[in-house]
Length: 337
Image (cartoon, helix red, strand yellow):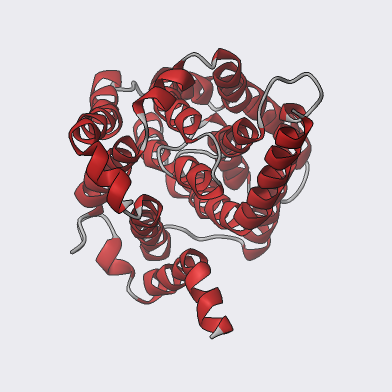
């Protein structure tokens, strides 16, 4: 019975392993143009569902309060779109002296230029019990900011002559992030009493949708015949990505919990996830646009394809630990009042 209880509790992590294995065995199902049609079901329906679900579950006053948490938003956006790419650029100056595939290194730089994700940071913040409203705000705002900033960063660090259709990307983000969130809030206004009484499993729904996103991501990776990787370089890049994520999570944790920071434990949770997570949903289309015609586009994309599931896996593993820390800090704060 104890084992079954444990399995139910960790179903999301188990689900991640299963969908990755499924993608390895049946990559054709989830690739673009395949039976699952991820270019529609993932890019539009899945992301929209996540934000509709968030809008439906989030109290309006919490979102309104998050809007004015300027210091938190400034820290998250400046960390992920300024500090992150600069540090990675400095790191790559050293790594360029090694034998690691140069295109994979360029891919690491592209990862650093990406905005916060529109799903994973929100889901993990919600799973911990952190400031979900702040996570949603930064995910949405960061995505819109990334439409302008990310291409500029890519051009600055890597260079490209392609133009980016800002209007089409902006409209897609508007339709998949802002509109579903607003619709969710409107529906909540009519269904508030019913929702509070029945308490639907909003977190589980979002997690299930995220598993679908992970599956299609790995389907793309496993089905791409153009990806010819040096195993040693790939292994080193995986280690580097993991190290970057852990280091930056620790850095944001240390900064947001220091004396006088003004951030609550719930704020710290949102900061850790939103500052260190990068968007695959926006990133891959952006790379295909900015680097259209690049012979090594698939190799440049590999680090982002690795970073996305890694951030979810690492975040999922850390959820119980972070939740315990946050609960402990909140109890301590109550006792000191």
